Every structure is written in C-alpha cells, then in structure tokens.
Image (cartoon, rainbow, N blue to C red; front, side):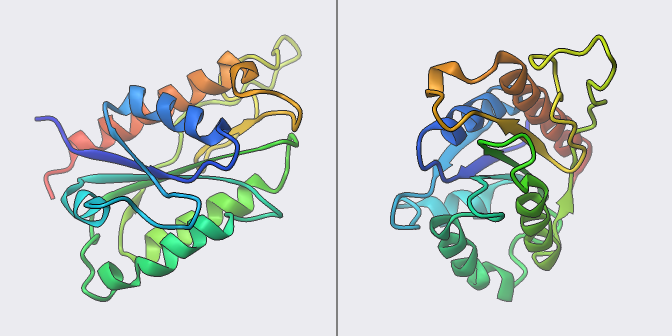
Length: 185
C-alpha cells in the first residue's frame, strides 16, 4: 500500500528546491513549498495533516534554517498542541555552500522539531563515500547519516548541482518511502 509523503521545503535560490525534487522523485511524494514570506499555500496544512510521512527541507543559513522556514515551524505549534503529527514518519535534508556549513545544526533543528511532534525520524541509511577512491560526485560524499546533505558552491547555478548530491537526495527519499511503507500507523 502506497503511503502519502509530503516534502515541505523552503528554497532561497533554487538549490534546495532542486534537492526537494530529487527527494520527491525517490519518495514518490508531493512537493509543498514554503513561500518567501514563510507561508504555506492554500490547503498546505491539510496536505500535511493527511500525510503519512513529512520530509522537511531547508537551506542552511548562518548555521540553521532560514527565517521563512522558522516561521512555518513556529506555525506548526497548532498541530503540535493536538499532537496531530504523532507517529508520522519524519526526515530532513539541507544544502549550503560550504562543505560543512553547519548543515548538521540544521538537521538537528529539524530532528528536534520532529521529536516535539512525537514523529518517527528516518536517517539516510547510506554509507559515506570516504575512501581514497571516492570522488566528490559519489553518493553521500558529504557523509551524513541524520538526513540528506548537499554542498553547492555559492557561485554555482541550480544546473551545476552535482549529480551525486542529487542521487543522494533521491535515494534518501526512496528510503523514507520504504520505511513509511513498513508502518501501519
């Protein structure tokens, strides 16, 4: 039985959107964009309420999520109060210009949010590409277990995102869908 998976994300320059599209391709999920003012589109909250899994994505700005995504997160206190997302599958992904860029802080922020909502967190399930033979375009070269990470230079266009990072995002989405399929909550 197919599960309903929603990828809710904010993208400032288009890189996180492209990553969200790769996650959605792997998960067979629906995209839900947080706009430039931090709001969901009409019906967005209902879409999240009906989801079996919610995958959250945001770029890492100054070591955390951008204010637009934070506004969405703060607004999620309404479903939090009634524990409306309890036992839903949760996961997260991020992108920043630097190889480290404090992306793990962003994923920890999303993980903490998921725990507050009593959700079930899913990591990448991917081994890192960390041998001498590894190349920057390998799957999970950024080496994250907590959620999918990508690193896109600040002067790179969306079209210059590395296929390895996008394949990492796709495989991550597929894993979330697989895990969601194992739950009958």
